[in-house]
Image (cartoon, rainbow, N blue to C red; front, top):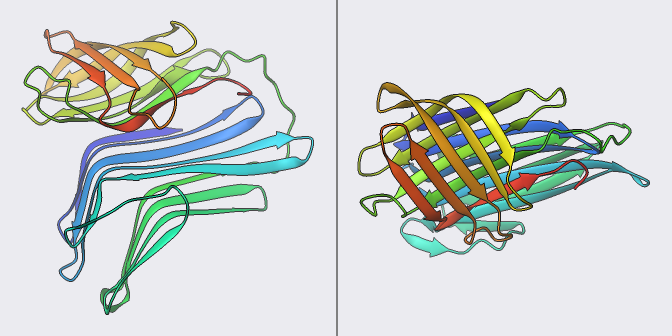
Length: 268
């Protein structure tokens, strides 16, 4: 399962860009991921912004049964203008007489791993907002590591655009257990170019760290195609790279300023 949105808006001046989500069963594990860039919400007494929010949940079948793990990222977080650093572990930030902001909530039970990267609660306004939630589940199963369903996911923002303007992105793509292609792409360049993928036509394992995707897309309202190279250079992700070429001549390339590219290989 997969989904993506170039932009999202809601009540209380809630905005975000380049949202993407995936749930994939692969080998001996199930993985779920959700991310969004340039999140902002203004509740009057509480304003929260973050340049990147991501949650990734994994459940795995092994000799000890089903186990769960998670990764959570909240980058460049501000609360009422005050910066806060996320540790990747659970944190609760109390705003006196207003409410709470929880970071990196994770829970495993009955074969399900649930992670919420950013959870905003203002009881006086009945506000309960979750940004970046991923749920992966498995009751039992046997491992099949012989599949070809290699895939890649990624999200974040970068400055490697033609005008050096900030661009946000969300992407996923690969092959399912039957070898069929799947995936999505959202890309927003602050200088004005917006791209949304409409299909994947090629997926190639370039080497142990890089994947190549090609597909059809909408470019500023017109039909086009894209070619994309994604490289996972390890955690925390700021050395990961994104290289996009569009059929109209647009080209953007560089390391992520915030975010993550993650390769997903069966049983690894």
